[in-house]
Image (cartoon, rainbow, N blue to C red; front, side, top):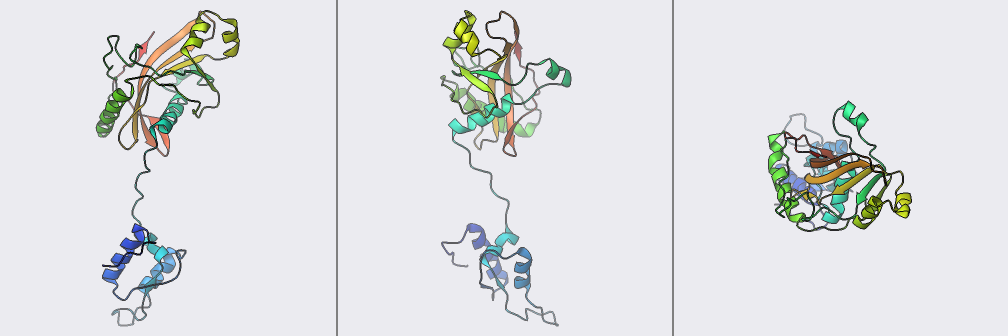
Length: 263
């Protein structure tokens, strides 16, 4: 077994161990900047005409371990307070449904987001009597079901109480609005109407539930379309959504059940 140098990464150590077993006379020298091609030349050396053994003693740079590299492990989960804003931002930036529905939908931005997350006192994500409301989500692909189940369990725990959202959304134009301000708009308060003029999309969000490695997320949100200080309400939808993280972005997962509530 090759003794491990504290300055080596585990990948260099594995490469040295393998080479030490199959190439007993292996020596190490040089820096970690040699190319894979040069590393192969030094490993193979100059073969004797008889084809037996090595004519020259081979050697390898510690940095040449790339020829033995294993796939990189998944990135570590982010702190919850940071990860949720990645989910919210990607979720609110995605158009849903077929082309005609998208044409009839309100613009994605600008968007007003309620500061307080949905809680036990709200109609969603909990039933009126206070029991956790089951999410209407079932992935079309069976392979996602264990991860979704894990995310739902986390979702129910995270939504036991409400918390206040921060200005950490990655959206080009949005604003946060409190319940008190929303009530003022409902009463046509002039200052509130002027402050939020131009916003047509209104959103209320639940806490996000993640599976253990943060590759799947579930969330409930209320998506409304109306103009401030206007009695006209085009639509309000309650939506249960699953998302999968791919390439650093959160993408909607196909749901095999329809659970949206429309009012």
